[in-house]
Length: 240
Image (cartoon, rainbow, N blue to C red; front, side, top):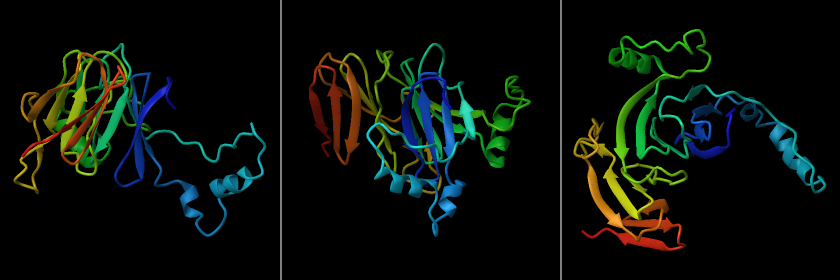
């Protein structure tokens, strides 16, 4: 479990795992595909029994724990301390995460044999003293790209990258500004898409609301919505 308040959660598109981030500056990945509860489709399992009992519970009663799990991946090396990871999102099999250092990081957890081969090629001399004798929970990562935004060093500012294709990334700051990036390059080659490596590449536009902190952005189709600390909601529409 986390050692601080959990601030964000994102499901993988497969529905088999999810990512969580917290005040303890860690990001953890959890696997639910091997949950024994899922194998009990023909008989009442712990969750089904808890739901049935819930109709008989008095106010204030609590559910009993059905199953306890540990994460299969955990890292605190993405964002610098002091900080907290207040936004995390799966983008396919890679991950976007943000802390309070004016940056969103795109990275890949090293969990498969292919990932380890790539990792060893990029970081041939890497030694993690804290994890070398503990392979139960994986922790190595491959950094892919940083997206920097000035004046975004206060906590709980949420970026937006709409599923299922996650082609766009948008993030605001405490000066009322919003940056919008094209997340992936090589858009004409569907079989060999790549991630832009430089922060200035793929920047589509900069938007301005007022001088209030943009706490969250959301994108749907051609529209981007930004919500601010002064209770204002701004809607921007892309023009062909």
